[in-house]
Length: 95
Image 1 (cartoon, rainbow, N blue to C red):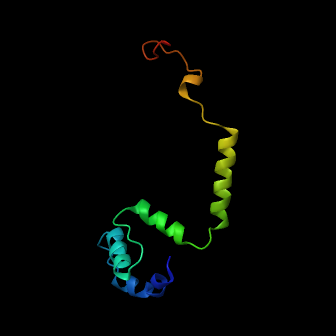
Image 2: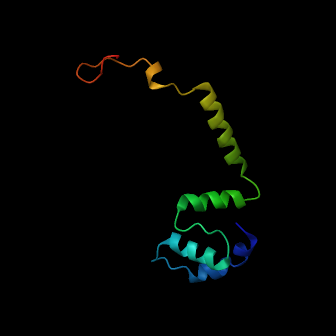
Image 3: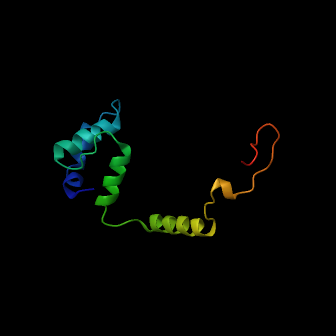
């Protein structure tokens, strides 16, 4: 998160209202601070936070490596190239 926002964290925490949607409060706070205009999109917020982070935790890197390794070992196959069970009344004949 940008240093300016980290510096005013206590101000945000003091003004935070637990009865109001959190995303809107964060969006308004960031917009007022002049940082990270993400509207009300959680995905955009996550993307901006990831891009502004100076380093990734090693657990994230390990997870990404595991996902890449698993995908290489178990490549996706197009459904036309897989053997499917024949179930009467459900499975369509090959055309």
